[in-house]
Length: 211
Length: 311
Image: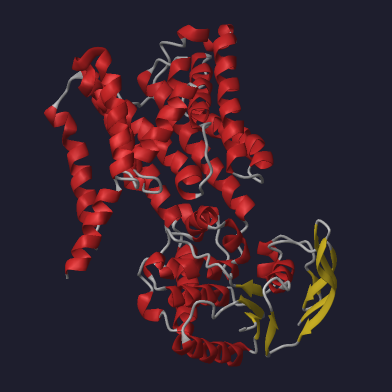
């Protein structure tokens, strides 16, 4: 599903990624582990387009995505979360997720301004997709809360819901359990297993060695 | 259906104003306040929602006003002027936004300051067409097929309708994928991109929609106030528009109206202080920013959250 060949990323003289080859098949959960500074996030950034690789080839379902803008990569079916939480603080929990689910639903500027029947239909579709994603991570009951009011662990779940709402083929989760206690981490694992079963989706976890 | 009551009350109060005062000076001031509210609402798209600092809003306002004044004075029918104003500001904002919005916020701030200055200098120096520093007067009024508003009060109702439409469109955009994309772009550009939002396109759209608001307000300004001069669209005015947005409440549609109307009327209310009014005006702005960082509009929000908490 995702196949990368010779992915290389240099920061000045430091070679952070040196010709990484990898394949992520469909419907699996795969974890990448390593100590701090081993290049896990760099690899994730290179795959998702947040910070492009210097060389190499990255394909999703055969589409070359190397050096594409991140929003195009997202539309090809790659979603991610962030190690340092990046939720949209001025939007509600539901709206956070709607930002991502909107990328699967066509809308037009004319439709928005004149509030056509088609626009209302699209908006309902966006909302339904977002609510499904929230239910999946167990945040359905907090849809109308302000996103910044959520406790830390739930903000991480919100990021997962947001990634999920763009209906991705592969999800890259960067340190999804960081800052969570044991119970929260266990719930998270259940959720990730659920995601995989739901849509033969691949999940890819970045996790630091517990030292 | 909560939320409709305050809107209905404010609308009723606005409609009743001419019953309280028919003073020409007050009505003129209110008309300018309404036009400023439309321009500030336009500024809110790029600055309040998308987080791009835009000091070119006064120049777009001026482009709309001068395009309208020059067109109608040269004999074109009024009905073409809104279209003309929109075409001109769309072209200007596209040319200005396309190269700069790919960069980060400060570049747009610098470019728009430069753009505002260019527009002002052209207006001041192209005297045969723009009237230079003395401006243009006796601009033909609004007429469509021989009908048009007469007197301040009819203009007041017309502008109020325009403001209502501008508010409706802004509210619809806020409740749509486009509005959410704008706010997501401000909060975290990279997270928005990775959620499938084309942030470059979103920033450009926010900037251009804002320019259209300013252009149309400029068109209405020229043909309802009937006199324009470069001072109304200078860099000082651009800063003033930004102040209205900040004091009213960045990102809040109601805040745009409160900020624009408040800061347009305040100097007149404080006129009895003579030269000292600027001191009080400045202090007032500082107090609002320190006490209410979210602007005047955030007061309503704080109260409703407190009420929720008390339940």
